[in-house]
Image (cartoon, rainbow, N blue to C red):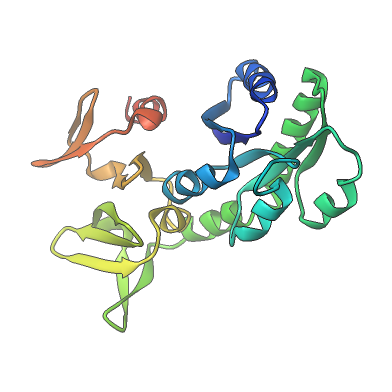
Length: 233
C-alpha cells in the first residue's frame, strides 16, 4: 500500500533531504513539499494524506501549533534541529521525532515505526475493516438518516464541504468532506481524483485521463494515476 506524504519545512535543504530519503523507499509518495504549514490546509482537506513530515521551528506558525489546529490530523513525524521539544511532541502522539541532520538509517527506522503503528492502532484502518464487513451505511440528508447500500453506489462527488452520492436510481447529498467519507467505504471504492471516488465494480471502461461508468466520464487526477491504473489493470 502506498503511503501518501507531505513534507513541511521552511528550509529548502531540509525538504530536499526528506525527498531524497523518500525516493529510496518505493511505497512512499510525496504528494507535496511545502515551506509553510498554512499552505498545507487545502491539501489535507482535498487529498488522502497518511503521513506528515513536519518541522517544528517555523515562522508565523510552528509545527506543534499547526498540529493543534487540526481536528483529525494524519500521523506526524516531527523534524527539528532542537532536542527540547521531545516531551511536548510525544504528548501529541506523534510517530517519531527526528533530529537534523536526518540520516537515511534514522529516517527508515521512523517509517518502519509508522508502518507498525498503522497496522495495529490506526483508527482509520480499524474503521475501514469494520465497514468492510457491512454492506451499507447511513448518511444524514434533509434531517433524515438515509440507508445507502454500497452495491448501489456508482461514484461520489465532492462539492466543497458536501458530497453527492450518485446511486443507480437516485442521488443523495450530505454534509461531509470526501476524505472523511472515503474512510467509511470498503475496498471496491477508489479515489481517482481530489473530487471523485468511484465504485470499481461499476467501471465499464477507462483511458489515460478518465474512468467511465456507462456514459459518465470521471476524470483521473494526476496524483492518483499510478495507483488507479494498478487497480484497474
